[in-house]
Length: 188
Picture 1 (cartoon, rainbow, N blue to C red):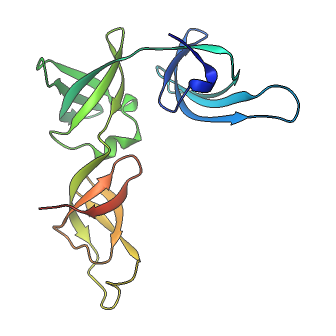
Picture 2: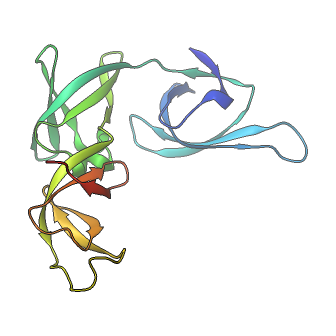
């Protein structure tokens, strides 16, 4: 589907010069002379290589339509992740490098959305937030429970997250997966 370059957003997949590219960042620039243009940082979906592209804002680009399907994470075996389609119960495996940096937040039974292009899995979309249990945290220092200081805590899965001073080991917390930041204590 042809779209104006100006309509591209972060996360869109485009076909350019025979390659599938995912837009990672974009910036529209209007110089003093000449027409406006879009500067985009893109990642090749197959190789993972990054590139910078420049498009005139009215230039047409080919945006790829992806099929999105719900999956559930089952298990990890070395560098291979296994997911099950929640509608058909079919299982697929995806290599670690195609999942991205957010893979450190994946946990058993997590529902994700996998995008396919011509039957081939391209990207794994995680939920915005998830609940994790704090496995290890420094003890509360008297007098610092009111201040807005943060301390490192280890959540299940082995990831460090900065949490407020009042959070202790065994506490369930909500974490924004995209940024890895603590949001709040989980509601019981």
